[in-house]
Amino acid sequence: MSETRHLFATPFVVDRLQSPEGIKVLRDAILAERARDQAGVSISNIGGWHSNTQMIDWGGEAARALAYKAMTMADAATIDAQAPRDSRYSWIPEMWANVSGTGNANQYHMHPGSFWSAVAYIDDGYDGAIDPRLGGELQLMDPRMPMIRMTAPDLRLKDAGGQAQVSEPLIRPATGMIVMFPSWLQHAVRPFHGPGTRISIAINLIPARKPDA
Image 1 (tube, rainbow, N blue to C red):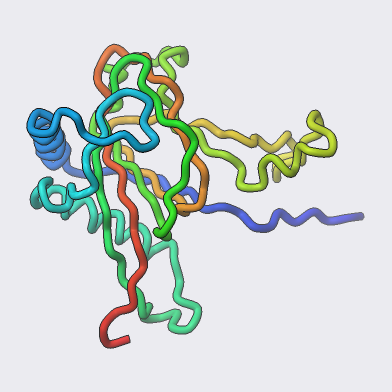
Image 2 (tube, one colour):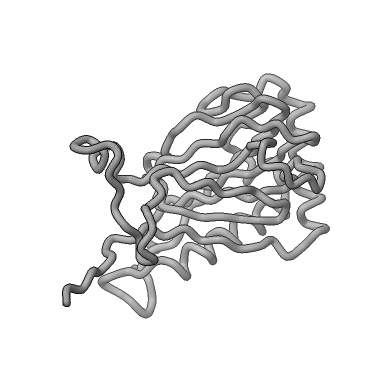
């Protein structure tokens, strides 16, 4: 009998922020920065407000603690092949905030130049509503796309459970959730129609050799 092995898995890490007080401090810092710099920048965002990428500086101690949380997650999910027990690499974090209202979204993009990317949800904007029509999900694209659909678009590969593999899985954010994935993974945010305001923080982790490594 034949055996099927599922190879080349893409890691997607999900964790939680443990401090409600820290989440509130981050929220206050983001709203203060938005009031100071109302124009923000426009990169992948479709509407909404996108801060500069210097949140490590203006976000205070809570932002640095969040960056450390992401770096800890990255350490747990990464291995230095030449030094498995004591990695020769550390991380340089880059951080920014997004504030989204009704109809706002993010187009498909990736984060060149970094190794891991993370998103922390400070306020999911759903205000407790569970209606899936509110949208706002994080959407991930199978890195093999569109090649696996080019020959026969209606055929699907089976997953480990025997079901059709999903090529664009959706992750519904929740306040306090933090997710991490390889920076080369294309991702987007579906149009958001929640009753509240979505506030999130994005983090890039750039690998750097330790000075004594």
